[in-house]
Length: 400
Image 1 (tube, rainbow, N blue to C red):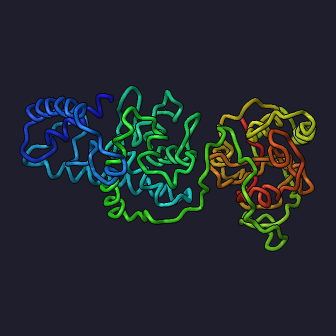
Image 2: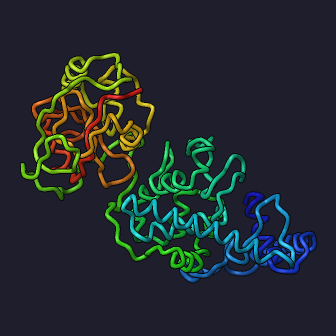
Image 3: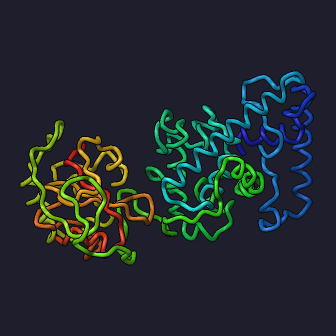
């Protein structure tokens, strides 16, 4: 247990945040009471997770505590401080739910995230924590959750919690997360030294979610799957949910469509595209990898990066590369990419997404689609018809 958790429990036990209590007396009394609780815990049986799953027993579930380093509320303004903290919690709850909906996750994902953030930061965007932990979910820059500035952005932190980041798993990577107890799932992401504390926030977070307008009964579209690789795409085992048809194609309008892919014109890649290999060289290299052996399992982003003469991409996942590509180089939904373009899909199976190199003639070079770990040349719509993925669009080959 880190200092933050001890302080939270002590404050809750002593009622520091309640009206009319003196800070010094409350902290000392709380610490003494906490020691007694620890002694009693050694003698008394611990209630089952099922029995306590809807009981508010964790730190932060009582009256809101002041930020560390700030003065305790006095009788004259204590209620105002509590309202201020509650507004922060409400705002952050709305942000978390907004991100969950954007990722097509069900309401249970919102609930688990709220429970986690309440335990980790009392749903406040803290600029401090244990070691270098910061933000709503107390994510650590040193653990590759992002830079401190990034983690301090609630939308970035919530996205990381849901989808994972760097070597860290997210909620969607936890096997059967939709059917497991919320507190158990939270622990699987956070790896806390005190996994029992998450469950105690469930009933309070259900109430807060209702106040924030979050529908916890909402159904999602994201699959309930196990871990995905950091770099990349789905395994190819997802059944198809897309119709393969030539109808409703666009002529480069950028609107999402379905059907076959046809060649578009390349009027020159926008600056600053200046890769070590030309488009023709990249296509030739990619075709040559079909006989190169099993080197590319779940490494689609690395494959296209190598095709253009680079090492691994600066991003961990294809979906992040798509998101970071400037808008002037992106063509959402356009099914007429020029040869050499990078084509992107949302796999719906986790955080990674998929990217392939368009070869021309409606064909792509893709890993894992026909043989796991191998590169094969296949129709570009195979990512949809075989994996059931959603086509996002194509971009100019802007890489590291």
